[in-house]
Length: 316
Ligand code: TUI
Image (cartoon, rainbow, N blue to C red; front, side):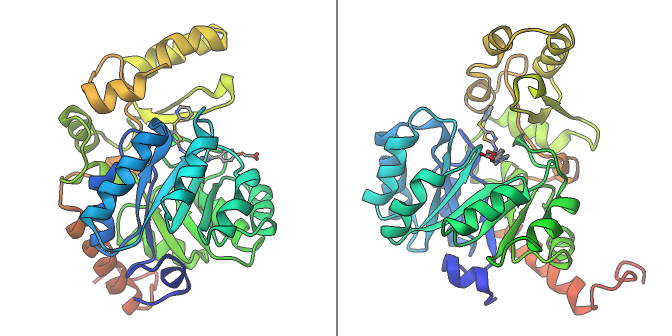
């Protein structure tokens, strides 16, 4: 494929892997890049030396471009922002805030900057500061989410900015790619689908939960503290919901959420872990190699659009 986004990214497919904190390491990023997407190392759980090591490891595993995701709530953000420049990372994605103060330095270093936005306002701001594209992420997504759904956010962002819009939230197969292409998206970001990949290093308990969870098994907690987070329902989400109903303070909530993503990813702790995943996890039923996931998605997309994407495509 050759599209505006593939030329910005230097990839075969217009696909970016979600920058999932604690999850997306060099192994996953290199696998996605080798399969023709843009693999992304998530710096959210790392300090600068750990990030540098992961970048160098990914370089040893692929000669294709890959990116780094900077999660802006991280206390290490200023140091991590410098590492991507020092290590000459070709693409940076960001999440959970505005990367405004870093964009100029990244652009001066020749880095392609693609922030995640959850509103038209931030999309417009990012375009005016020189972002190469934006990832518009709907609230179907896993982890930290905004208010608007993918279906409503994408067309509004597409009408707000001239730069390419990458759709995220709820996309895990070729139907999802076809759908957001109709809304004007120039590409997709996929996270949850890669949780159930062979190359993803999360604990087997986490993968098993993603594979077995149903459409209705997703919960959003943390709204009271201003950082809503979507996870697969668990004893932790139940406790969070109960505490929030009682009007618990941010500090009270923090005592059970601190370290909970690590407990899910590293320890597979079914009681205390937060198993972040998008609503589309209900559709994910098989652990596959990354290459099969990506090739399968785009083969299905091609099949749909070759029939004109008509409303009858499924009906024989
Ligand atoms: O960042 C994500 N997803 C994440 S980050 C993460 S680690 C974490 N864990 C617990 C609490 C908070 C974070 C897990 N999942 N997705 C991208 C994303 N960005 N979603 C929503 C946003 C966002 C929201 C508000 C971006 C900007 C924003 O406002 C910025 C502004 O200044 O307007």
